[in-house]
Image (cartoon, rainbow, N blue to C red; front, side, top):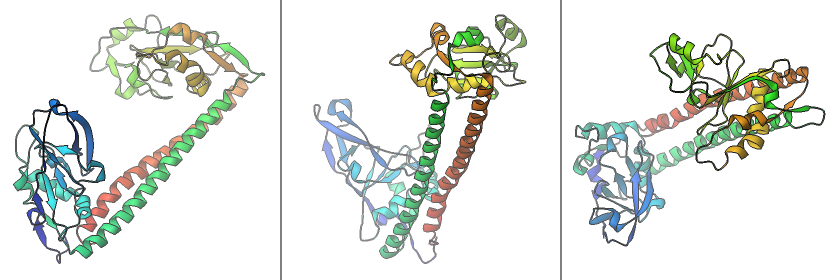
Length: 395
């Protein structure tokens, strides 16, 4: 902290305030909550007076300092914004009126987002149940950096200017991600449009084997052969590293009907991820769990990777799969529907060209996503760094 700034206890700038509202059954009350890690106060829900055991609630006004006694050690501290004006909280949400002659609310708004305050709150919290409450008088003993009002306003303005630029950068990043995904979807739609010079064939005619629910009630082991379940299937990928496993004996029992081989497609046939699909890679050995289906293509007619791209394209996902599962409380794919799905089947050389183009496009999208993940981490670290400097007087 800037040595020229005094460190003062919160009790010098904040005082407990009670704006009691009687709770009457039949009356409605807007309640509030306070998010962790300085993410602010929010309107939680509207309740009837009969839904709470409290006889009074405490009304909050814009600019109040609010804490959640239970979770203050997790940064559940906020300055009320206009969105919670008039909301009410129980005794678990102590409220404090700020002395505007000494502190501006936005100074504490930003200070509530600092690790410095969270650590001080944690140190003063008590209890052993994991919900360590802090007493309001203890909270008010926390010392905060307090420069003159003019300096507070200058620093807050600078922080908000930089925070706006961070938000702008996030927006650009998110828009570029959406645009890349939309372009990929558009190109997939174009690649599998039903052109008059391409054969249109039922999916079953392009497969040598379609297996639905290969085996149920698997017996899992700590080690052994991966068993692919719906959570292990992504959009074009299989994640066997996190899969449950079965012993070699169980694997042999479960693959009597068919053993998944490289280039076989595995589809999610049931649940929230219905329609996801991945492909078994060379060197991968696995069995099938519940809620998945396996396709083995006739490679004299269709390339496995071509079928995977087409399965994930709007041609299948939007035009054929969505109408089948739309509105279902338990989305699932019946094998008879899958067999009848229409495929666009150009000659194999054209399939290779389409696969090469979409693979290259997907690689570029994946590379962009990786860069965006890296930039997201850098942006997430930027604001805490700015706040650290701000409240040390280095901004």
